[in-house]
Image 1 (spheres, helix red, strand yellow):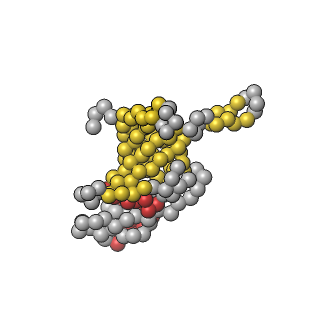
Image 2 (cartoon, one colour):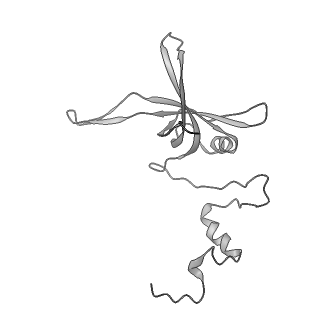
Length: 162
């Protein structure tokens, strides 16, 4: 939609994802992502942490179910989505606060300090079946189908010198 602010946030999950279902049966997940900026102080020759920014992120449908099955508290994530207008509220101590909300378009574990094994989920309700294997098997599976364009590097009779 025009006029929406798209942002990307890198931070850690504050809690395990909270998966719920609407009355219509649509899955929705909520996660809180905390991002703390760090700056290097040349006078003290040390890194200093800034104030943590907390963002409530919401995902819907299949994305919500994938998030709840894949991510846990403390996981470093990269989240991109549409920023919603902040909502103002009062804390229990009576302080005025504002809450940032992000509707998730994409989310994934950061591989800067970790590794991950990706498993593709089977699609529901389609006539095409998607294997439960990792994405790395996709070229081999396409080549089995006999489509010459699926893997052009193995075409017989191509004597191109470069």
